[in-house]
Image (cartoon, rainbow, N blue to C red; front, side, top):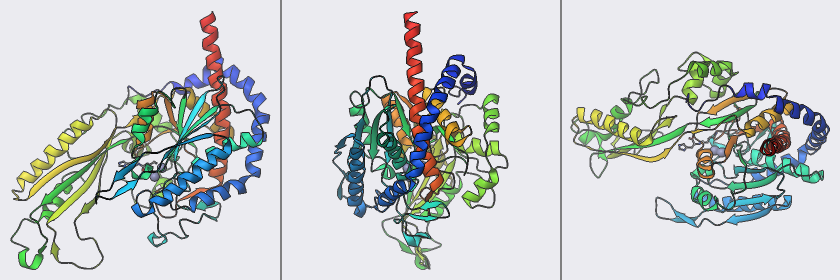
Length: 517
Ligand SMILES: NCCCC(=O)N[C@@H](Cc1c[nH]cn1)C(=O)O
Ligand SMILES: [Zn+2]
Ligand SMILES: [Zn+2]
């Protein structure tokens, strides 16, 4: 990480005389414009919330096959909304996919939208998704997950923050320029998908196919599909961890057995599996797989200091999380272990009895599922090898006659962006304008495959600009976005359009002047 980290970027934003003078000149002339825009957004809060209510009402759960038609319906609503903005909309058919049980389901189209083609303007491509994670009231929701409900300034509903709210906030911001008949400061492109929660099937291929066409004139890519680090302080995200997902399967035979008849005389697969899973991490969180930390980029003193300067309330984070105690006691340690060290989590065991009540069975085949979050510069194929060798070693010591299979069904690399890009400078300024403070520059401990996908394929500058707060509860019961975050997030996007437009034009003027001189 020391290689890709840019500790001097804050200084360059503060002290660059060219950028500073231009920013002062243009910020005074644009403040009246910003006021007009922000007033419009404040005045139209109810309309924006009504739109979100309409979107949340669609159960566009991409995980459960029987709800696929709702995802399709959601894609049509999103395409219509973009068309109403004046965008040209191309809904690209991605065909179908096969489920593990053999059924074939249609894939939702991916929307490619375009609005504006002014050669003076930068072209900003926004990515978002309008599918959601499953949600049922019985899971422990206080309100119906598909009825957006406002309680104490929070808008509760599945997809409110992940990701329908942020997608609509971006659209609202564009709509504001249109409604006020203002010149668009940027050209817009949109990539809206409906399979993000199910692995973005087909998206990578589409991006590759469109790289020389749709993406050829894109200057910047913005994703708003994650959260701030804190409940109140805005953030900009420049990196995320990857993930290596593993299945470890132990099998004794073809049928489950009665534990009264066979218990005590056989090597039980679940006992083998529990021993294997128990060998992975110690009680301090340290991964026990030999060599696993070898690839991790060394931490520099500069970097450690930067972590120290991030505002992060351990108590608030612990409350959001709902646990009694963290593995680490300091802010620095917590952030390091969330962002730039690998972590291993055990997710579940397929084939083990998990219903309420008692069932005195010995399962014949069990599959443990775990994953290891990846950081620079870990190598997925090396990690796969290390995991397999470790598990085979532990298993062989047990002298079990059962069969062991280890596989890595999914491997995603980490993502890291250059925070010196204009994109980050523009967003930082917009945040300062709307929220009155500088953002935290953060990474995300989770995996955002699309960020890396966009960066690798298009080679454009990618930024994650979240508007949701740390306590929004993505994927959880009672997911919400606050009215404040939704509305101020809309203003942030509008202010960002103005800032990126200014910085982009200035940088092009500067390079043009330099060329002439
Ligand atoms: N805040 C954005 C979170 C996005 C997310 O939940 N990503 C998944 C993706 C994934 C990783 N491994 C398998 N799927 C995540 O768990 O990080
Ligand atoms: Zn999301
Ligand atoms: Zn999600």
